[in-house]
Amino acid sequence: MLKVIVIGCGRVGAELAYRLTQRGHKVTVVDMKSEAFHNLPVDFRGRIVEGEALNKEVMERAGIAEADALAAVTSNDPLNAAIAHVARTFYNVPSVVVRNFDSRWRSMHETFGLQVVSSSSWGAQRIEEFLYQQETRTIYSAGNGEVEIYEFAIRESWHGHPLQEILPEQDCVLVALTRGGRALIPEKHFILESGDVITISATLDGSENLQSRLQSGPTQS
Image 1 (cartoon, rainbow, N blue to C red):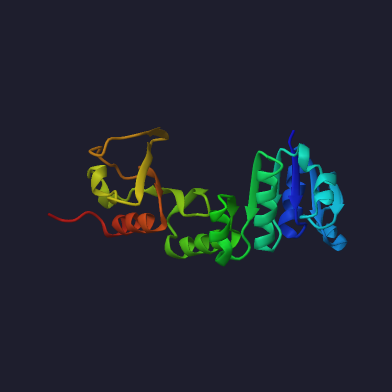
Image 2 (cartoon, helix red, strand yellow):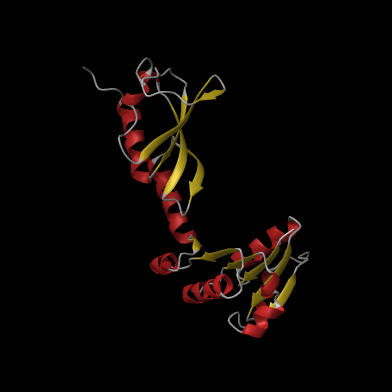
């Protein structure tokens, strides 16, 4: 069981706090507005502390000295960065995560070396991917979506061709190939069959390059 402090009880903070308590963790939510706690479900079983998160007394009342983790998820990016910096530097909280509300402030969080989640950047990229890649399945997203793991089905036109012909030279790394329900890590000269599924780690550019190759088919020699 973790002792977690959630700073900010907006929709994100309330949802996060509730999910953590449902998993059995000890959660304290801090917000300077009492009405913000109305966002919490009626069966929320954690603690609430009203007050300014940068106030030493408020944070110590929330239990920061014994906290295992802290999430700063307010809609104020400079405040999130300051809280996270204090929690990590002065209270040695082992795990600190910040929410990036405005993507223009993201570089600030990165300058502090903070673990950051940018819902706006991630959401925009996911929507962009769905618009571009209707036949692609994303199974894992790292960071804020800069690198993701995708699954691509091999088309009939690529049957009998070596794997190396289909993989882009950059921004794309093979993770595995699945054939008949069995996964393996093949060499680049491995011969593809229709119905194979390749799992790759790639940037958006890399995945688009691979998608383009799949659709256009092998080059005729």
